[in-house]
Image (cartoon, rainbow, N blue to C red; front, top):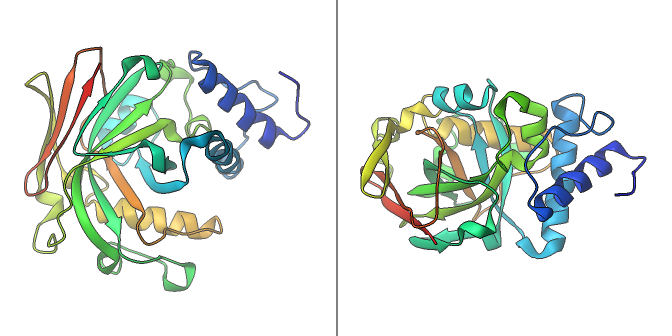
Length: 266
């Protein structure tokens, strides 16, 4: 690959090429590694543009990574991070995906929301309370991640952010529009693989309440000169540590009061 004098462009193109080639995850070369979180988000922005140009679809949603203690401990990064979700990688209900389309397909159990209106800088800063009115619906959801089997000892916040927080799509359960009377923080959720419960949690495992990561994301995007938009889907963070799937596995996310979403890997 031809070296690029711009390390932001070079890092984005390196990550894009590695993912397209299906190579095992690794650190960025020293000359391309972003020195801080601000630079890492610039790499992420450029990487997202490359995926859009390659046919992944427009940015139609966002994930907030590492909002729970179990996920921070798994990855070894103690701060939330964001990543985009592309339109062609959003599935609904019961999805079937090929194991061969991923290097290392992982799944996470989450509460997702769909936004009713834009969240511009002029309306912020946002918090758990003033952001409630922007949530049109909540749903049980599965985040699909592909860490390309990286050794997590190699992962820091800058690499995770630069690589779009490892997002590879999501599966959304049925929308619940009358969610306002639900105590989202208290809702119990679980992940099942092949009928066996492999992890449990509650909505409050995501920074204390699922709307806290949503507000964090809205503010972070505003600080970066952009915003959450009407219709965007936001994954608020896994309440169960990531599990990796094999061909033939059937996985379900259930959240009390919000239903379920499922994935079969072929």
